[in-house]
Amino acid sequence: MTSVTVNHLTKDFHVRKGLRRNTLRAVDDVSFELLPGRTVALVGESGSGKSTIARMLAKLESVTSGSIDVRLEDGTPVVGSMYRRHVQMVFQDPFASLNPFHSIEHHIARPLQLHHRTRGADETRERVRELLDRVNLDEDFAERRPHELSGGQRQRVAIARALAPGAQVLVADEPVSMLDVSIRLSVLNLMGRLQREDHLAVLYITHDLATARHFSDEILVLYRGRVVERGPSDAVILDPHHDYTRLLADAAPDPERVDRRVTAGPVVDRATIDNTTCYDHGLGAWVDAPAAPVGAR
Ligand SMILES: Nc1ncnc2c1ncn2[C@@H]1O[C@H](COP(=O)(O)OP(=O)(O)OP(=O)(O)O)[C@@H](O)[C@H]1O
Ligand SMILES: [Mg+2]
Image (cartoon, rainbow, N blue to C red; front, side, top):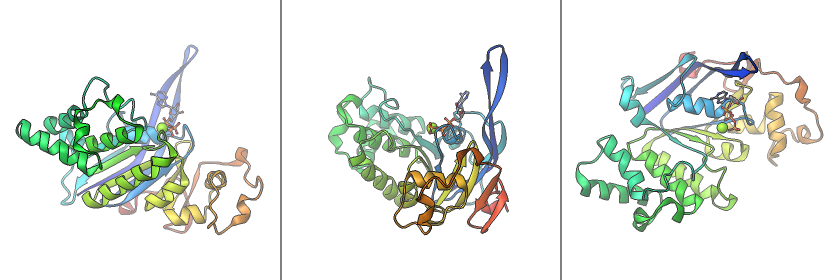
């Protein structure tokens, strides 16, 4: 079982503006923990830095400052090729993440071979079928190519492929937002089941507060690169404190909300929202954003 501690993570991008180079701070001092068997949801509007955090976790993007510490249960640091095996991503677009020229079998067999999870073609074939079965796909799917699958089926393949190397940490960046509404729930339920079976530590990135509440233990609300509210999912959704969270919640009203008046009328003025303080439901207090992960306090 593997845990991730993200400490004071910051990412600057250098963007060209005419002749000048500007620095854009996409992620600013973000800290959290991912624990086995638990899901943390990262919610926030477009451009708030969610994917940048995911990409840094998956080592697809360098870290400007701060740290990402991945450890086994006995404290052994997970580094190098072991890191790539342990930390896997599921991307938003199931069409872009699968190569149209390769069969489904190839997509799942490849990580098994790369990470030496199987010995010989027979074992690999058997393992591919097992993985397809785990994501509720018939073994006939092995022979198919991505264009012969629906979006939901492709995303199941992407999940099977992420699990293939023996993933312990799953970073799911809006895994269902491109799927038809009717099948979103089944894919999220599947991820939930796999998480329980394999004790995965999951970071679930979404715009959707309702699924964030349902599928995660903790929610981090990201606004302009900073965490502005954090806490147990129910607390954040039912009793939002930060103006930005209220704004998000207003866009997705929840009938169970304690303070229904918040949703009546434009009580939150976007122009006055700041991202320099964070409400931490665990502490029951406002803190200067961000708070360190619980374990590091
Ligand atoms: N490679 C890059 N170079 C320059 N700027 C970038 C790069 N990648 C992301 N950004 C900028 O960083 C900010 C955060 O982007 P990011 O993709 O993390 O947002 P997001 O929260 O995932 O948004 P969305 O919900 O639309 O997916 C944005 O302002 C974006 O333009
Ligand atoms: Mg994104």
